[in-house]
Image (cartoon, rainbow, N blue to C red; front, top):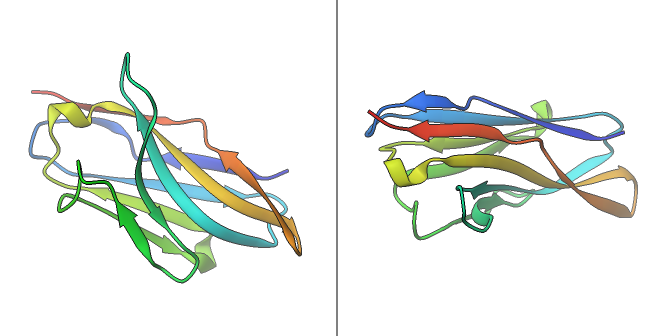
Length: 120
């Protein structure tokens, strides 16, 4: 059973920083693309950032220049570094990943989410 577990959320003042982590555990043969989504109250879930196995990244325009995604394949972990946080970044942040537990096939998994609140 594969699990994605996020950590690192919390309450931060505007202009502050947080780093989210997403650890993949269980019967993991390979990890492909990893992504971070967020969902604010009353809004649709949106893609914030993604990273491929080779390290190619995508960052949404709304957070470009402030957020960065990275991964440590040996640790089976993806990160989201969030700087210069704004109140509008307040949301539940979800980790998402394409994980193979056997060769030649993968399944898309979601983490349980971690709350990020930006407020003074």
